[in-house]
Image (tube, rainbow, N blue to C red; front, side, top):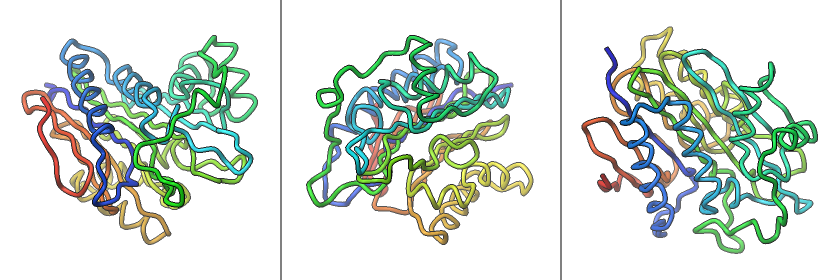
Length: 297
């Protein structure tokens, strides 16, 4: 018997104490309520995480989609991944340009090809062939993510992600990022790499945010799942261990995760993480700085 549906969203762990994240929290609250309604109506977890991440990309409030960070050349390169835990099917794109929703492109890679990851020009060509929405004018399409100021820019913590468990107990995860400000052209972080920033199987769904290079070195998302599967670790314990390992390897950040039963876990080793979560029969919550959360549904 299913443990009931659950969902969690994150908008990055680049939170600074003393700042207000009211707009981002309002967006997350709206999206977690929408995701809850979808799951209550029987929507598959895979569809729910794609829709939630696409909406965060479109909001312009996070370092993903419209809020992405230009690299050293002033170009915007977009990364995303999505994974279906029930089947281990996955799709991802990296260094994608000119496409409004990279998570939608990642879903098309999963559904329409035999591949898992498409990059650069090939990813852009594929998205065009799939008829995905193009970015017609990058300058007017981009927004400035909430909380950024000149000289105090996010350092790789603006990734967005979602994990969900549907009424049939199926798990899914999706992650999307618009990179880091001033990054080298072609730089790819953990978000589109299955097992690093994104993972879902029959036991665990994971989406990471933080310094991508450290999360790659830690194989963070898969390591978390392996600690649960092979070591019998509790989800909270596994999540904390993975964050410690990433920190040892040079990067802080945060993780959201779900197992086959129980509530979502949201952990971070920064000042906070923009996050929201809900569980069947337990309400919905949102927070950013530290442990300060509020009920929103």
